[in-house]
Image 1 (cartoon, helix red, strand yellow):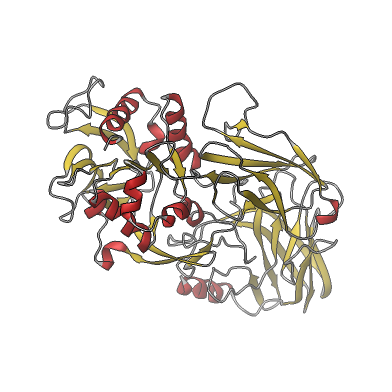
Image 2 (cartoon, rainbow, N blue to C red; image 1 turned 60 degrees about the vertical axis):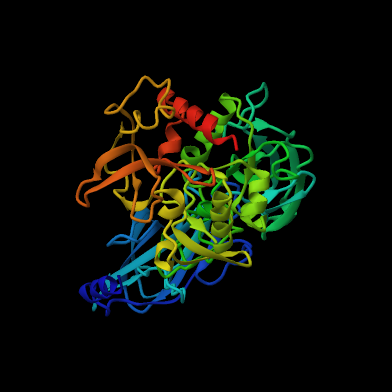
Length: 530
Protein backbone atom coordinates (compact mmCIF):
# COMPACT_ATOMS: atom_id res chain seq x y z
CA UNK A 1 0.00 0.00 0.00
CA UNK A 2 2.83 2.44 0.80
CA UNK A 3 4.39 1.74 -2.62
CA UNK A 4 1.10 2.58 -4.33
CA UNK A 5 0.93 6.03 -2.77
CA UNK A 6 4.62 6.80 -3.24
CA UNK A 7 4.30 5.99 -6.93
CA UNK A 8 1.20 8.17 -7.20
CA UNK A 9 3.01 11.11 -5.61
CA UNK A 10 6.00 10.84 -7.95
CA UNK A 11 3.76 10.50 -11.00
CA UNK A 12 1.75 13.61 -10.21
CA UNK A 13 4.76 15.72 -9.29
CA UNK A 14 5.76 17.19 -5.90
CA UNK A 15 6.70 20.71 -7.04
CA UNK A 16 3.35 22.35 -7.77
CA UNK A 17 1.89 25.29 -5.86
CA UNK A 18 1.97 24.74 -2.12
CA UNK A 19 -0.65 25.38 0.56
CA UNK A 20 0.66 26.94 3.76
CA UNK A 21 -1.12 27.45 7.10
CA UNK A 22 -3.81 25.00 6.01
CA UNK A 23 -6.67 24.87 8.50
CA UNK A 24 -10.43 24.25 8.73
CA UNK A 25 -13.17 25.71 10.93
CA UNK A 26 -16.96 25.67 11.03
CA UNK A 27 -17.18 29.47 11.31
CA UNK A 28 -18.70 29.20 14.77
CA UNK A 29 -17.89 27.71 18.17
CA UNK A 30 -15.64 24.64 17.89
CA UNK A 31 -17.02 21.35 19.09
CA UNK A 32 -15.09 19.37 21.70
CA UNK A 33 -12.02 17.81 20.03
CA UNK A 34 -11.92 20.13 17.02
CA UNK A 35 -8.42 21.22 15.99
CA UNK A 36 -6.50 22.80 13.13
CA UNK A 37 -7.36 20.08 10.58
CA UNK A 38 -10.61 18.84 12.13
CA UNK A 39 -13.92 20.64 12.42
CA UNK A 40 -17.48 19.63 13.24
CA UNK A 41 -20.46 20.78 11.18
CA UNK A 42 -24.19 20.08 11.34
CA UNK A 43 -25.85 20.94 8.03
CA UNK A 44 -29.40 21.54 9.26
CA UNK A 45 -29.79 25.11 7.89
CA UNK A 46 -30.09 26.68 11.34
CA UNK A 47 -27.20 29.07 10.73
CA UNK A 48 -24.96 27.35 13.29
CA UNK A 49 -22.07 25.14 12.13
CA UNK A 50 -23.60 24.65 8.71
CA UNK A 51 -20.39 24.82 6.66
CA UNK A 52 -16.71 23.87 6.69
CA UNK A 53 -14.38 26.77 5.89
CA UNK A 54 -10.93 25.76 4.61
CA UNK A 55 -8.32 28.52 4.78
CA UNK A 56 -4.75 28.50 3.44
CA UNK A 57 -2.06 30.66 1.88
CA UNK A 58 -0.98 29.89 -1.68
CA UNK A 59 2.68 30.45 -2.52
CA UNK A 60 1.81 31.16 -6.19
CA UNK A 61 -1.31 31.37 -8.39
CA UNK A 62 -3.00 27.99 -8.90
CA UNK A 63 -6.09 26.11 -9.84
CA UNK A 64 -7.24 24.41 -6.64
CA UNK A 65 -9.68 21.52 -6.54
CA UNK A 66 -11.29 20.49 -3.24
CA UNK A 67 -13.14 17.17 -2.95
CA UNK A 68 -15.18 15.88 -0.02
CA UNK A 69 -14.25 12.21 0.16
CA UNK A 70 -16.11 9.49 2.01
CA UNK A 71 -13.75 6.69 2.99
CA UNK A 72 -14.47 3.01 3.51
CA UNK A 73 -12.43 -0.16 3.95
CA UNK A 74 -9.00 -0.30 2.31
CA UNK A 75 -8.12 -3.95 2.82
CA UNK A 76 -8.32 -4.54 -0.92
CA UNK A 77 -5.61 -3.53 -3.39
CA UNK A 78 -6.88 0.06 -3.60
CA UNK A 79 -8.45 2.36 -1.03
CA UNK A 80 -12.25 2.46 -1.18
CA UNK A 81 -13.31 6.09 -1.39
CA UNK A 82 -16.21 8.04 -2.83
CA UNK A 83 -16.22 11.69 -3.85
CA UNK A 84 -19.47 13.22 -2.57
CA UNK A 85 -18.78 16.85 -3.54
CA UNK A 86 -16.13 18.86 -5.35
CA UNK A 87 -15.26 22.42 -6.27
CA UNK A 88 -12.55 23.89 -8.53
CA UNK A 89 -11.37 27.50 -8.34
CA UNK A 90 -8.63 29.64 -9.89
CA UNK A 91 -6.92 31.47 -7.03
CA UNK A 92 -4.21 34.10 -6.70
CA UNK A 93 -1.19 33.82 -4.45
CA UNK A 94 -1.76 34.75 -0.82
CA UNK A 95 -4.61 34.10 1.62
CA UNK A 96 -7.58 32.13 0.23
CA UNK A 97 -10.46 30.02 1.41
CA UNK A 98 -12.85 27.40 0.07
CA UNK A 99 -16.18 26.46 1.64
CA UNK A 100 -18.08 23.16 1.71
CA UNK A 101 -21.73 23.38 2.69
CA UNK A 102 -22.91 19.77 3.04
CA UNK A 103 -26.49 19.02 2.10
CA UNK A 104 -28.81 18.29 5.05
CA UNK A 105 -29.08 14.69 3.77
CA UNK A 106 -25.31 14.10 4.09
CA UNK A 107 -24.83 11.00 6.29
CA UNK A 108 -23.20 11.77 9.65
CA UNK A 109 -19.54 10.65 9.62
CA UNK A 110 -16.14 12.15 8.82
CA UNK A 111 -15.03 13.23 5.35
CA UNK A 112 -11.55 14.07 4.08
CA UNK A 113 -11.33 17.31 2.10
CA UNK A 114 -8.70 16.38 -0.48
CA UNK A 115 -6.97 19.30 -2.15
CA UNK A 116 -5.11 19.38 -5.48
CA UNK A 117 -3.16 22.41 -6.69
CA UNK A 118 -2.12 22.88 -10.32
CA UNK A 119 0.12 25.62 -11.58
CA UNK A 120 3.72 26.56 -12.33
CA UNK A 121 5.98 23.64 -11.43
CA UNK A 122 3.31 20.94 -11.59
CA UNK A 123 0.78 19.92 -8.97
CA UNK A 124 0.53 18.93 -5.32
CA UNK A 125 -1.90 16.71 -3.49
CA UNK A 126 -3.16 16.77 0.07
CA UNK A 127 -5.34 14.13 1.72
CA UNK A 128 -4.18 10.98 -0.05
CA UNK A 129 -2.95 9.38 3.16
CA UNK A 130 -4.06 6.03 4.50
CA UNK A 131 -4.70 5.13 8.15
CA UNK A 132 -1.61 4.54 10.23
CA UNK A 133 -0.71 4.09 13.87
CA UNK A 134 0.96 7.51 13.76
CA UNK A 135 -2.19 9.21 12.53
CA UNK A 136 -0.59 11.23 9.70
CA UNK A 137 -3.09 13.81 8.44
CA UNK A 138 -2.21 16.52 5.89
CA UNK A 139 -5.68 17.66 4.79
CA UNK A 140 -8.82 19.01 6.47
CA UNK A 141 -11.24 16.50 7.96
CA UNK A 142 -14.90 17.42 8.47
CA UNK A 143 -17.09 15.63 10.97
CA UNK A 144 -20.72 15.87 9.86
CA UNK A 145 -22.57 15.51 13.13
CA UNK A 146 -26.03 14.09 13.65
CA UNK A 147 -26.90 12.74 17.07
CA UNK A 148 -24.07 10.58 18.39
CA UNK A 149 -25.58 8.45 21.15
CA UNK A 150 -24.16 5.37 22.83
CA UNK A 151 -24.54 3.57 26.14
CA UNK A 152 -21.49 3.24 28.36
CA UNK A 153 -22.24 -0.47 28.88
CA UNK A 154 -23.41 -3.09 26.42
CA UNK A 155 -25.82 -4.73 28.85
CA UNK A 156 -27.69 -3.85 32.02
CA UNK A 157 -29.37 -5.96 34.67
CA UNK A 158 -32.96 -5.16 35.66
CA UNK A 159 -32.87 -2.25 38.10
CA UNK A 160 -29.58 -0.84 36.85
CA UNK A 161 -29.58 2.75 35.66
CA UNK A 162 -28.38 3.11 32.09
CA UNK A 163 -25.93 5.88 31.26
CA UNK A 164 -25.97 7.39 27.79
CA UNK A 165 -23.30 9.51 26.10
CA UNK A 166 -24.75 12.11 23.72
CA UNK A 167 -22.96 14.49 21.37
CA UNK A 168 -25.03 16.83 19.18
CA UNK A 169 -25.63 20.52 18.62
CA UNK A 170 -29.41 20.15 18.42
CA UNK A 171 -31.24 22.59 20.68
CA UNK A 172 -33.53 19.87 22.03
CA UNK A 173 -33.81 16.09 21.98
CA UNK A 174 -36.59 13.56 22.32
CA UNK A 175 -35.57 10.21 23.79
CA UNK A 176 -37.60 7.01 23.78
CA UNK A 177 -36.82 3.33 24.34
CA UNK A 178 -38.04 0.58 22.00
CA UNK A 179 -38.02 -3.17 22.47
CA UNK A 180 -38.74 -5.76 19.81
CA UNK A 181 -39.53 -9.02 21.44
CA UNK A 182 -43.30 -9.20 21.67
CA UNK A 183 -45.88 -8.40 19.03
CA UNK A 184 -48.45 -6.27 20.76
CA UNK A 185 -50.36 -3.06 20.07
CA UNK A 186 -48.23 0.03 20.52
CA UNK A 187 -45.97 2.43 18.70
CA UNK A 188 -43.65 0.70 16.26
CA UNK A 189 -40.29 2.21 15.40
CA UNK A 190 -39.94 2.09 11.59
CA UNK A 191 -36.19 1.33 11.53
CA UNK A 192 -35.95 -1.32 14.25
CA UNK A 193 -39.58 -2.54 14.28
CA UNK A 194 -39.46 -2.07 18.02
CA UNK A 195 -42.33 -1.52 20.46
CA UNK A 196 -42.25 1.68 22.53
CA UNK A 197 -41.39 0.92 26.17
CA UNK A 198 -41.28 4.49 27.46
CA UNK A 199 -43.00 7.74 26.56
CA UNK A 200 -40.98 10.38 24.71
CA UNK A 201 -38.86 12.45 27.03
CA UNK A 202 -37.82 15.94 25.91
CA UNK A 203 -34.40 17.24 26.90
CA UNK A 204 -33.36 20.85 26.43
CA UNK A 205 -29.89 20.76 24.90
CA UNK A 206 -29.10 24.38 23.98
CA UNK A 207 -26.41 24.69 26.67
CA UNK A 208 -24.76 21.38 25.74
CA UNK A 209 -24.14 21.97 22.02
CA UNK A 210 -20.33 22.03 22.08
CA UNK A 211 -19.32 18.83 23.88
CA UNK A 212 -20.45 15.29 24.64
CA UNK A 213 -22.47 14.85 27.82
CA UNK A 214 -23.68 11.89 29.87
CA UNK A 215 -27.37 11.36 30.53
CA UNK A 216 -28.79 8.91 33.05
CA UNK A 217 -31.90 8.32 31.08
CA UNK A 218 -33.62 5.11 32.05
CA UNK A 219 -33.64 2.37 34.65
CA UNK A 220 -34.37 -1.04 33.16
CA UNK A 221 -36.82 -1.90 35.92
CA UNK A 222 -38.57 -5.25 35.41
CA UNK A 223 -38.21 -5.24 31.66
CA UNK A 224 -37.72 -8.73 30.21
CA UNK A 225 -34.31 -9.79 29.00
CA UNK A 226 -33.88 -8.67 25.42
CA UNK A 227 -32.39 -6.22 22.95
CA UNK A 228 -33.49 -2.61 23.25
CA UNK A 229 -32.84 0.58 21.30
CA UNK A 230 -32.96 4.11 22.55
CA UNK A 231 -34.19 6.43 19.79
CA UNK A 232 -32.94 9.99 19.88
CA UNK A 233 -34.53 12.58 17.61
CA UNK A 234 -34.34 16.35 17.22
CA UNK A 235 -36.86 18.92 15.95
CA UNK A 236 -34.71 19.51 12.83
CA UNK A 237 -35.23 15.90 11.72
CA UNK A 238 -32.02 14.24 12.89
CA UNK A 239 -32.42 10.69 14.18
CA UNK A 240 -30.15 8.15 15.83
CA UNK A 241 -30.27 4.95 17.84
CA UNK A 242 -28.28 3.36 20.65
CA UNK A 243 -28.61 -0.39 21.35
CA UNK A 244 -28.36 -2.04 24.74
CA UNK A 245 -29.17 -5.48 26.13
CA UNK A 246 -31.14 -6.16 29.28
CA UNK A 247 -29.63 -9.31 30.70
CA UNK A 248 -31.46 -11.49 33.23
CA UNK A 249 -31.14 -10.60 36.88
CA UNK A 250 -30.17 -14.23 37.54
CA UNK A 251 -28.84 -16.19 34.58
CA UNK A 252 -31.12 -19.11 33.71
CA UNK A 253 -33.92 -18.09 36.06
CA UNK A 254 -36.50 -17.33 33.33
CA UNK A 255 -35.27 -19.62 30.54
CA UNK A 256 -32.72 -22.38 30.10
CA UNK A 257 -31.86 -21.03 26.63
CA UNK A 258 -29.35 -18.20 26.29
CA UNK A 259 -28.89 -16.12 23.12
CA UNK A 260 -25.48 -14.43 22.85
CA UNK A 261 -25.56 -11.37 20.61
CA UNK A 262 -22.21 -10.75 18.97
CA UNK A 263 -21.47 -7.31 20.42
CA UNK A 264 -17.71 -7.69 19.86
CA UNK A 265 -18.32 -8.17 16.15
CA UNK A 266 -20.71 -5.20 16.11
CA UNK A 267 -17.87 -2.93 17.19
CA UNK A 268 -15.28 -4.57 14.93
CA UNK A 269 -17.49 -3.62 11.97
CA UNK A 270 -18.20 -0.14 13.34
CA UNK A 271 -16.45 2.29 10.97
CA UNK A 272 -17.00 5.35 13.15
CA UNK A 273 -13.95 7.62 13.06
CA UNK A 274 -13.30 8.68 16.65
CA UNK A 275 -9.76 10.03 16.21
CA UNK A 276 -10.71 12.37 13.37
CA UNK A 277 -8.30 11.22 10.65
CA UNK A 278 -11.11 10.64 8.14
CA UNK A 279 -10.86 6.83 8.25
CA UNK A 280 -12.94 4.44 10.32
CA UNK A 281 -11.33 3.13 13.50
CA UNK A 282 -11.53 -0.57 12.70
CA UNK A 283 -9.13 -3.30 11.68
CA UNK A 284 -11.45 -3.82 8.70
CA UNK A 285 -10.26 -0.44 7.49
CA UNK A 286 -6.53 -1.00 7.94
CA UNK A 287 -4.20 -3.63 9.31
CA UNK A 288 -2.41 -0.76 11.05
CA UNK A 289 -5.38 -0.65 13.45
CA UNK A 290 -5.25 -3.39 16.08
CA UNK A 291 -7.94 -2.35 18.56
CA UNK A 292 -11.42 -0.83 18.64
CA UNK A 293 -13.12 1.34 21.24
CA UNK A 294 -16.15 -0.49 22.62
CA UNK A 295 -17.80 2.76 23.74
CA UNK A 296 -18.21 4.27 20.28
CA UNK A 297 -21.70 5.00 19.02
CA UNK A 298 -22.42 2.98 15.89
CA UNK A 299 -21.81 4.79 12.64
CA UNK A 300 -24.92 4.12 10.56
CA UNK A 301 -27.37 6.15 12.64
CA UNK A 302 -26.59 3.93 15.62
CA UNK A 303 -27.71 0.57 14.17
CA UNK A 304 -24.93 -2.07 14.15
CA UNK A 305 -23.61 -3.43 10.86
CA UNK A 306 -25.89 -6.10 9.33
CA UNK A 307 -28.00 -6.08 12.47
CA UNK A 308 -31.17 -6.71 10.49
CA UNK A 309 -29.66 -9.88 8.95
CA UNK A 310 -27.82 -11.42 11.84
CA UNK A 311 -29.97 -10.46 14.80
CA UNK A 312 -33.33 -8.91 13.99
CA UNK A 313 -34.41 -11.79 11.74
CA UNK A 314 -33.68 -14.39 14.38
CA UNK A 315 -35.20 -12.38 17.23
CA UNK A 316 -38.34 -11.93 15.13
CA UNK A 317 -38.47 -15.69 14.59
CA UNK A 318 -38.18 -16.33 18.31
CA UNK A 319 -41.07 -13.93 18.82
CA UNK A 320 -43.32 -15.43 16.16
CA UNK A 321 -42.76 -18.99 17.36
CA UNK A 322 -43.20 -18.16 21.04
CA UNK A 323 -39.71 -19.18 22.15
CA UNK A 324 -38.63 -17.98 25.57
CA UNK A 325 -34.95 -17.08 25.89
CA UNK A 326 -32.55 -14.87 27.81
CA UNK A 327 -30.23 -12.43 26.02
CA UNK A 328 -26.55 -11.93 26.75
CA UNK A 329 -23.78 -9.73 25.37
CA UNK A 330 -20.18 -10.86 24.94
CA UNK A 331 -19.51 -9.07 28.22
CA UNK A 332 -22.11 -11.21 29.97
CA UNK A 333 -20.47 -14.38 28.71
CA UNK A 334 -17.31 -13.12 30.40
CA UNK A 335 -19.19 -12.91 33.73
CA UNK A 336 -19.32 -16.69 34.04
CA UNK A 337 -16.37 -17.96 36.02
CA UNK A 338 -16.39 -21.32 34.28
CA UNK A 339 -18.24 -23.53 31.83
CA UNK A 340 -19.59 -25.43 34.82
CA UNK A 341 -21.40 -22.30 35.99
CA UNK A 342 -22.68 -21.68 32.46
CA UNK A 343 -23.98 -25.27 32.29
CA UNK A 344 -25.88 -24.76 35.55
CA UNK A 345 -27.67 -21.79 33.95
CA UNK A 346 -28.39 -22.97 30.40
CA UNK A 347 -29.13 -26.15 28.47
CA UNK A 348 -28.71 -24.41 25.11
CA UNK A 349 -26.53 -21.48 24.08
CA UNK A 350 -27.26 -19.87 20.69
CA UNK A 351 -24.94 -17.62 18.68
CA UNK A 352 -27.26 -16.22 15.99
CA UNK A 353 -24.79 -13.73 14.53
CA UNK A 354 -21.22 -13.54 13.38
CA UNK A 355 -19.40 -14.49 16.63
CA UNK A 356 -15.96 -13.98 15.12
CA UNK A 357 -14.14 -12.42 18.09
CA UNK A 358 -13.74 -14.31 21.34
CA UNK A 359 -11.51 -13.81 24.37
CA UNK A 360 -9.56 -16.66 25.91
CA UNK A 361 -11.86 -16.74 28.91
CA UNK A 362 -14.94 -16.79 26.69
CA UNK A 363 -13.49 -19.63 24.60
CA UNK A 364 -12.59 -21.57 27.76
CA UNK A 365 -16.07 -21.12 29.23
CA UNK A 366 -17.92 -22.22 26.09
CA UNK A 367 -15.60 -25.17 25.47
CA UNK A 368 -15.98 -26.37 29.06
CA UNK A 369 -19.74 -25.85 28.78
CA UNK A 370 -19.76 -28.16 25.74
CA UNK A 371 -17.59 -30.70 27.56
CA UNK A 372 -20.09 -30.69 30.44
CA UNK A 373 -22.88 -31.58 28.01
CA UNK A 374 -24.09 -28.08 27.15
CA UNK A 375 -25.75 -27.71 23.73
CA UNK A 376 -24.62 -25.13 21.16
CA UNK A 377 -26.21 -23.63 18.06
CA UNK A 378 -24.18 -21.49 15.61
CA UNK A 379 -26.42 -19.82 13.02
CA UNK A 380 -23.75 -17.96 11.06
CA UNK A 381 -20.20 -18.72 9.90
CA UNK A 382 -16.65 -17.78 10.82
CA UNK A 383 -17.25 -18.19 14.54
CA UNK A 384 -14.53 -18.04 17.23
CA UNK A 385 -12.00 -17.12 14.53
CA UNK A 386 -9.94 -14.41 16.24
CA UNK A 387 -8.59 -14.28 19.75
CA UNK A 388 -9.16 -10.86 21.27
CA UNK A 389 -8.23 -9.27 24.57
CA UNK A 390 -10.19 -6.75 26.56
CA UNK A 391 -7.97 -3.88 27.71
CA UNK A 392 -10.08 -1.36 29.54
CA UNK A 393 -12.68 -0.14 27.07
CA UNK A 394 -10.74 -1.36 24.04
CA UNK A 395 -10.89 -4.70 22.27
CA UNK A 396 -7.50 -5.79 20.93
CA UNK A 397 -7.19 -8.31 18.10
CA UNK A 398 -4.45 -10.84 18.89
CA UNK A 399 -4.23 -13.86 16.58
CA UNK A 400 -6.35 -16.51 14.89
CA UNK A 401 -7.32 -19.25 17.32
CA UNK A 402 -6.24 -22.00 14.92
CA UNK A 403 -2.75 -20.46 14.82
CA UNK A 404 -2.69 -20.74 18.62
CA UNK A 405 -3.35 -24.48 18.59
CA UNK A 406 -7.09 -24.21 19.27
CA UNK A 407 -8.81 -24.64 15.87
CA UNK A 408 -12.41 -23.55 16.11
CA UNK A 409 -13.59 -26.63 14.19
CA UNK A 410 -12.85 -28.71 17.30
CA UNK A 411 -15.62 -26.79 19.07
CA UNK A 412 -17.98 -25.59 16.35
CA UNK A 413 -17.64 -28.64 14.09
CA UNK A 414 -16.62 -26.50 11.09
CA UNK A 415 -14.44 -23.45 10.63
CA UNK A 416 -13.92 -20.55 8.24
CA UNK A 417 -12.84 -21.72 4.78
CA UNK A 418 -13.13 -18.57 2.69
CA UNK A 419 -15.26 -15.73 1.34
CA UNK A 420 -16.47 -14.55 -2.03
CA UNK A 421 -17.82 -11.27 -0.60
CA UNK A 422 -21.28 -12.18 -1.84
CA UNK A 423 -20.37 -12.38 -5.52
CA UNK A 424 -22.33 -15.60 -5.89
CA UNK A 425 -24.65 -17.49 -3.60
CA UNK A 426 -26.46 -20.79 -3.89
CA UNK A 427 -28.75 -23.15 -2.02
CA UNK A 428 -27.86 -25.89 0.44
CA UNK A 429 -28.16 -29.41 -0.96
CA UNK A 430 -29.45 -31.79 1.70
CA UNK A 431 -27.20 -34.77 2.42
CA UNK A 432 -28.28 -35.82 5.92
CA UNK A 433 -32.00 -36.54 5.64
CA UNK A 434 -31.39 -40.29 5.82
CA UNK A 435 -28.81 -40.23 8.61
CA UNK A 436 -30.48 -37.46 10.66
CA UNK A 437 -34.18 -37.66 9.69
CA UNK A 438 -35.22 -35.62 12.74
CA UNK A 439 -33.47 -32.53 11.32
CA UNK A 440 -35.58 -32.30 8.13
CA UNK A 441 -38.80 -33.81 9.46
CA UNK A 442 -41.81 -31.85 8.22
CA UNK A 443 -39.87 -29.90 5.60
CA UNK A 444 -40.97 -32.12 2.73
CA UNK A 445 -37.36 -32.32 1.58
CA UNK A 446 -34.98 -35.25 1.29
CA UNK A 447 -31.42 -35.93 0.27
CA UNK A 448 -30.52 -34.17 -2.95
CA UNK A 449 -33.13 -31.41 -2.52
CA UNK A 450 -32.00 -27.78 -2.36
CA UNK A 451 -33.18 -24.85 -0.25
CA UNK A 452 -32.26 -21.23 0.36
CA UNK A 453 -29.56 -19.02 -1.07
CA UNK A 454 -26.37 -18.57 0.94
CA UNK A 455 -22.68 -17.79 0.82
CA UNK A 456 -20.53 -14.71 1.46
CA UNK A 457 -18.38 -16.43 4.11
CA UNK A 458 -18.48 -20.19 4.51
CA UNK A 459 -17.31 -22.92 6.89
CA UNK A 460 -16.08 -26.45 6.24
CA UNK A 461 -15.08 -29.45 8.32
CA UNK A 462 -11.39 -30.06 8.97
CA UNK A 463 -9.29 -32.85 10.44
CA UNK A 464 -9.87 -31.21 13.84
CA UNK A 465 -13.68 -31.52 13.61
CA UNK A 466 -15.07 -33.97 16.19
CA UNK A 467 -15.18 -37.47 14.67
CA UNK A 468 -18.92 -37.66 15.34
CA UNK A 469 -19.61 -34.67 13.07
CA UNK A 470 -22.40 -35.36 10.57
CA UNK A 471 -22.88 -33.46 7.31
CA UNK A 472 -26.50 -32.29 7.09
CA UNK A 473 -26.24 -30.18 3.94
CA UNK A 474 -23.66 -28.51 1.74
CA UNK A 475 -23.33 -25.86 -0.95
CA UNK A 476 -20.99 -27.55 -3.43
CA UNK A 477 -18.09 -25.48 -4.75
CA UNK A 478 -19.50 -22.14 -3.60
CA UNK A 479 -15.87 -20.96 -3.81
CA UNK A 480 -15.00 -22.74 -7.08
CA UNK A 481 -11.52 -21.27 -7.50
CA UNK A 482 -10.58 -22.59 -4.07
CA UNK A 483 -12.57 -25.83 -4.37
CA UNK A 484 -14.49 -24.99 -1.20
CA UNK A 485 -18.03 -25.92 -0.15
CA UNK A 486 -20.17 -24.59 2.67
CA UNK A 487 -21.07 -27.34 5.15
CA UNK A 488 -23.94 -27.50 7.63
CA UNK A 489 -23.08 -29.92 10.42
CA UNK A 490 -24.24 -31.54 13.64
CA UNK A 491 -22.47 -33.64 16.24
CA UNK A 492 -23.04 -35.13 19.66
CA UNK A 493 -20.43 -35.87 22.32
CA UNK A 494 -20.17 -38.78 24.78
CA UNK A 495 -21.07 -36.25 27.51
CA UNK A 496 -24.38 -35.59 25.75
CA UNK A 497 -23.62 -32.22 24.13
CA UNK A 498 -25.39 -31.49 20.84
CA UNK A 499 -23.78 -28.93 18.50
CA UNK A 500 -25.23 -27.48 15.29
CA UNK A 501 -23.40 -25.17 12.88
CA UNK A 502 -25.09 -23.53 9.88
CA UNK A 503 -21.87 -23.13 7.87
CA UNK A 504 -22.93 -19.98 5.96
CA UNK A 505 -22.69 -16.38 7.11
CA UNK A 506 -26.21 -15.30 6.17
CA UNK A 507 -28.13 -18.36 7.31
CA UNK A 508 -29.99 -16.58 10.14
CA UNK A 509 -31.32 -14.00 7.66
CA UNK A 510 -33.45 -16.75 6.06
CA UNK A 511 -35.34 -17.91 9.15
CA UNK A 512 -38.61 -16.54 7.77
CA UNK A 513 -38.53 -19.20 5.03
CA UNK A 514 -40.81 -22.15 5.92
CA UNK A 515 -38.13 -24.82 5.36
CA UNK A 516 -35.59 -23.00 7.50
CA UNK A 517 -38.13 -22.21 10.20
CA UNK A 518 -39.10 -25.88 10.43
CA UNK A 519 -35.43 -26.92 10.51
CA UNK A 520 -34.84 -24.54 13.42
CA UNK A 521 -37.94 -25.85 15.18
CA UNK A 522 -36.54 -29.37 14.84
CA UNK A 523 -33.19 -28.23 16.19
CA UNK A 524 -34.90 -26.42 19.05
CA UNK A 525 -36.81 -29.54 20.05
CA UNK A 526 -33.60 -31.57 20.11
CA UNK A 527 -31.15 -29.04 21.62
CA UNK A 528 -33.21 -27.04 24.10
CA UNK A 529 -33.54 -29.98 26.44
CA UNK A 530 -30.64 -31.32 28.56
